Amino acid sequence: MRYMMYVVMMGLPLFATTLEQVTEYAVQNSTVIKQSRAQSDLSELKRKESKVQQYGELNLVGDYTHYNTARTLAPLTPNTIGAGTPITTSKDIFYTGVSYAVPLFTGFAQTRQIEISTIAKQMADAKMKLTKEQLVYNVRSLYLSILAQEQILHAQREFTAALQTLAKQIAYEVKLGKKAKIDLFKAQSNAQSSQTQVEVLKNNIAITKATLSSLVGKEIKHLSGVKIKISKPSYSINRLYGEISQLTRVEMEEMSLRKADKTIEKSESAKLPQVNFSGFVGKNYGEDLATNDWDDETLWQAGVNVKWNLVDFGKRDLGVQQAKIAKMEATFQKEQTLLDLKKLLTEAVAKIKQSYAEYLGNSAQLKLSSKSEKIEKVRYNNDVSTLNDLLLAKGQTQLARAKVIESKYNYQKSKYYLDYLLEKGVE
Image 1 (tube, rainbow, N blue to C red):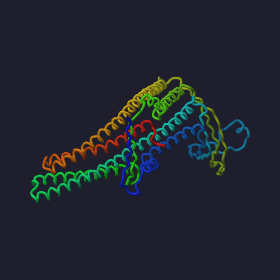
Image 2: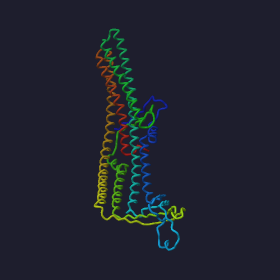
Image 3: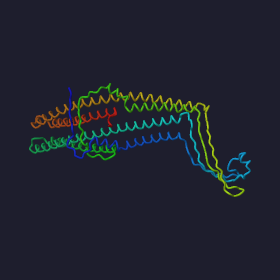
Image 4: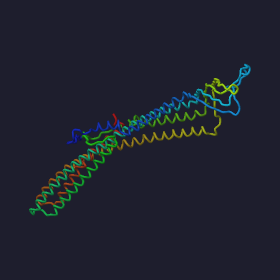
């Protein structure tokens, strides 16, 4: 048999904020999302940084040196000596120029670093998506908690008003001598206790709204109702298991494995030769000791440097082993993530079924409690039962009403939680 009910919260102001508006604003403006977006931007900058490093460096250089003996502005060569022209010498030599250095071959270390940075950027984007999913679920959960508390508060106020009316009726009958004064004290005590509960609920609502406002990034005052469709759950747990491989959480673990592979390859590159190019062009300046005139010489050079580390006493091997262990950890983490997701999905479906069953049970209990309260009221008015029996019946009815409201919203929260696990919260 299929049970279905549509529930809409009534009596809210026209300018109330809807759940969709709150979640949309949170996704765009929450500080949690801004932090995640900043981390994604940082990963992109690191990726670009690792990419431009392969183009080397171009530097403007300069220097001043004072020598104890005169030096030439340029190295002496046979052609210079044989030309017979005067050679400028100086104790104070300045030079300015431009230098350029670029790695020609790093054993593919740079290439692997670029690939690692690219994967890190993808992981940051995936993490931001999961952060949005977590944020949307938290906002929905708090939103529904507020609505539930507001409905319970409304019911509690009606319950308080009913107790106060009962107390007034008993006070009148006490004056007529129909009821004992002890009944009046009991009724007034219960009315005061119910009023205290009203204040507690109001404070809880204020605290929950403050929490929601902090999470969303703006003050939330009035909330619009949510249409809740309560129907018998019919989830296929095996079908849900089949969706796990497509989840971003699993994709992130696969990214971690690829990143670990690239880190191993980068560590292996240290065993290959490193080839670098460097060049310089500039001028040396100095005051000729013989003529006291300033002179300059243009110099340039270019070269290729090769370095191949033959023995480092196991340092490179240790780096490779560390990278391999990191991959093993990533493999274990992926396996654990898959197991955890299966467990969480099973729990989520069970919670939905449990909330549904509680809603049906609480609804049936509310109907019976309401009937019992009406009977006890008639019995009390006819002096067949005591005031304690009537107050107990009223209390049970109020408790059942609160449980119905709570189980209704818990049912919807459970569905939102399943959407969060399946990453369907963010459109």
